[in-house]
Image (tube, rainbow over all chains, first blue to last red; front, side, top):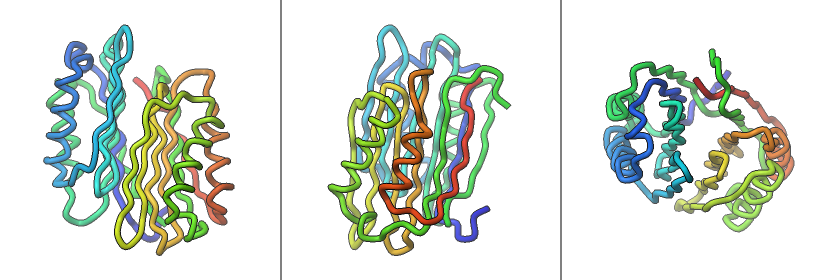
Length: 116
Length: 116
């Protein structure tokens, strides 16, 4: 139970995604940056790593917290976290965008209030 | 409800922390790296940003997902996420370490199974 809400954290289990997209490094970067824009957030820095033989992990550090993705192409699954602070942000729009971008057929999204 | 667990995500609301430590950039970096070791995880890259007049945001990208921290020194609060995959990892040890390192008097930790 949070008394003072300082941020909102969308925890997205994206199942049934397009496996090729989940392993496309350029696509993942572009999608994350688009998600940042949809969230009306400010990108500070992006870090990314491509695993062998497959899978990508990436985080966008934001002025308003972070957006992360870890992909399992072989399972059509991505774990996406969209954690933003501030009344100006629209994390749910970023969430919707990621579901659509990854062609996710079975999203399961939990929203947590973060704070004190 | 997750049928196939691919990772474990500790969501730590750390209240009542030492405010000076929450604004000490070097300390935050060192602590995160120590947390990575406690988790028995592999660091890929660290990104960090120091806000003016206060507050630090940082993420350690791991082979096993990520550890992040966003601090509000003025509130003695840090939002910490420790998300790891693989049977070799010990995220709860990293969690305990962060609570201790930040001298947190009032931790509130939620553990989520991540996956399909």
